[in-house]
Amino acid sequence: MNIEQTVSTAVADLALGSTFTFDDLVGAIQDHRQRTLRIVELADLGDHDGICAVWLITESEDLVLHAHSDSVLHRQQFVLHEFAHMILGHGEDDECSTEDFLLPDIPARTRRRLLTRQDLDSHTEIAAEALADHLAAAIRGSVCGESRYLEIFG
Ligand SMILES: [Zn+2]
Image 1 (cartoon, rainbow, N blue to C red):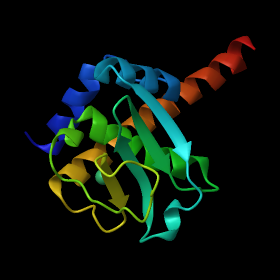
Image 2 (cartoon, rainbow, N blue to C red):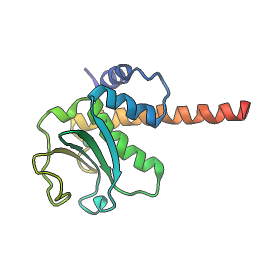
Image 3 (tube, protein in one colour):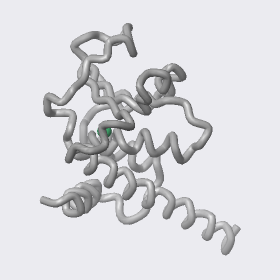
């Protein structure tokens, strides 16, 4: 499957339609994975090697830790990229890093994925980034839809 097909299949599987809110998406991922999904900002994150976000798989939940950014869109993109890995099932492979300096309190056996600015050339990274872009566009679409609704009916 090429990346375009991978992305459109993943989006169709979410069954959220062409526009949705960020919260809709979180709900769909939780249902899909049957696990709680938590998003946490970690101020220290960006200080190490340009890491923007990390997906941690713990016993009971999925945690997405993301670096601080003054831009909401930027922050959303970090998080959507990790969501894309979840949706595409990338956490089930063995591509994990063990950057223990980052999060000493998290159990060592926890599997994690790191997004760094350098790792965008592998197939999984390109697919995740493409899906993240698609999700961002769908979320933007829903925001526009709402404000247009308010314009007309507000
Ligand atoms: Zn990635």
